[in-house]
Length: 632
Image 1 (spheres, helix red, strand yellow):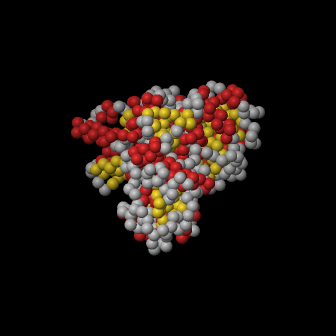
Image 2: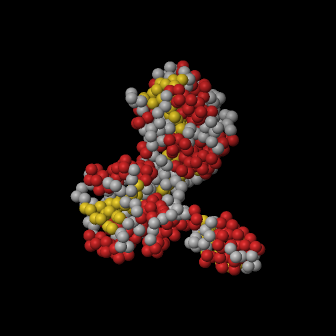
Image 3: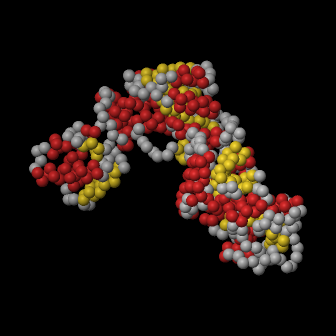
């Protein structure tokens, strides 16, 4: 062993010993003379002296003390074994010139000199235009690349004098460095491929927004097995990384608007900041200096230099589309059906991966300025913006947020088909709840707006809700067609659960007027229509229909009183005015899933369940998102 104290480890005396810290270490050692021992040993812990030589000549008792101390330092993360380092061919001049870069690698990994040598000898191409491109060349040269190719593209002016200056500076600092300059007249795939030929790594940035080229470069480099580290400037924001294959997912999740303009702020120090991030990403990737876990994309506001990192889920387009037989599909549905329900806390932790202000499947959960009484209201903010707003509500923040997340993920899943998963005839597989068998339905009937979409913490809950939505739709159609007459119900005398009673109690002081009617007589199962005053506010069916209906009425009244129409329940066309009378019928018992399926079957309609799983990463977070289509 050749013990070496990590470069960033510092030590200070304490009242009863010594404290070592830095490089991820935080070690407290106690003993009257322990600080003196560390201080005397430190100059020799440089990786050049073997452990045997350190101990040679010491009395037995001192030898034991030193050996034990070195073991404590090694276990505490303060020491590395230089004997385990791989050999390198760096000269003394290179070791001295690039000592900071080598020390950076050593902070994270062993064999730092060998790793830096690998980076130094890599063939690196910097491609782009403008001040950001020039700054990236400076960054790459300063980091120690021996042979750098600079490929200038035509979309933005590049300071040629500055490139000449960089060439001269690098020659003085590092005579072995070589900067080869090339100018491209265009950026077709063929021209780009030729310019990048033989490169181990490609760094790409331009002061102009070149999103199309960024996408094509990713494809070209992936095909050639080249590392790509690139930044894209959109208006006054630079989006940097991630390096390698994950870039495609980040770009798809970002869903950047088009078109964009060059930024007036991307000059001087700002360009250097952007270049520094990209250069460091390339350096760490080629040296293996860091393993930061899941990839992120870096966002830099070019006006303020405010910098943030944003995680993202893998995008379906960046993965292979899974193919499965009918038998495999049936087995998967059975696994989903028999899986344990998610606990609310577990769902909350898993769903966090779906949320990010810029790269999330859902951008945020927000209460905004909405009134939070009597019901809490939360919005699941979607990338599409205010045109497609999704809300959750409940008797507490946790319930409202959970519902908003479930509805938001369901809305996303039904709008995110992967055409590669379609059969040749444009169909997808589903599970027929009547025939209890695998069948197919047109993908256009699945990935569209309308009822039959649900998400829940368990499979049966999601399927039941989606089937109930379809029953509600048919019942409304019956009323519209005149084949079903709404039957007034005695809501005040209904037997309701604690939540339903609370909703009724809150409606009275709020001045809400609730009317309910059973419109499911032609269908053969209870389907409850609800009015708040004269306005139809919803139709509920299945387990919890009464409580859900009262909640919709209360939500509508809250929206009416506060003037917050955004979350008001949408009107139900075709219901008309509420039935009038004083003697309502008893509220019928809820129908369960088998009863709902039987009612649909009696109308020659087979409910087919389709898992909305075309985004595997989101499906992993929440497997219980379904679309129920009525076949027949």
